[in-house]
Length: 229
Image 1 (cartoon, rainbow, N blue to C red):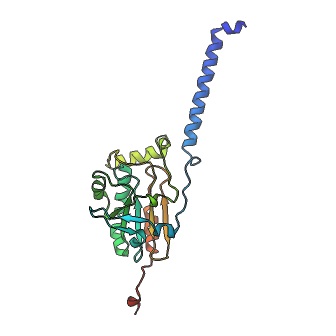
Image 2 (image 1 turned 180 degrees about the vertical axis):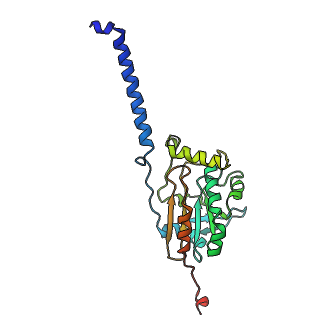
């Protein structure tokens, strides 16, 4: 048992434990930056989206079914993760840059938020050139709501998104719920259905603007019986 009295034995043991801990941490970091442990989004059915209750943002709020947003002319709809988030403001500004071309196509641009606190929606409005509605039951974030919490802060892609938005001059705050991931939908009128469904996989995972425009160009506006005559 004389080896127990050898200081080099303990040094080697401590080094092995330290190396093992570093290896485990490195492996955990590597796995966190794959999509292996990300919650897989469940595709939304048209009927599910049509039946969502939305509210207008004024004091005397009006409740209506979501299908009213796209029933006639289709729509591009952003499900905002958190209005005060600078990444969400960046994506809102990007989508708003498409507004002139969407107007040419006759396709409206909307957003839904999951809560209405303080001046969050009012402060978000300068970044978003469309009407905003309240989805209190968070249905646009389902059918299976996905959250990103601590994993979001060890993903390289998230930090790249942080830097991109910061470099673009966007800022925000920490008010409100920001862990339930959002998305973007392009809806065709009537039963044309969902033309594009982008689900945010991590903080700052923006929709591809070219894909949004391509989907919007596929929209076939509904014509009433009187217009056909």
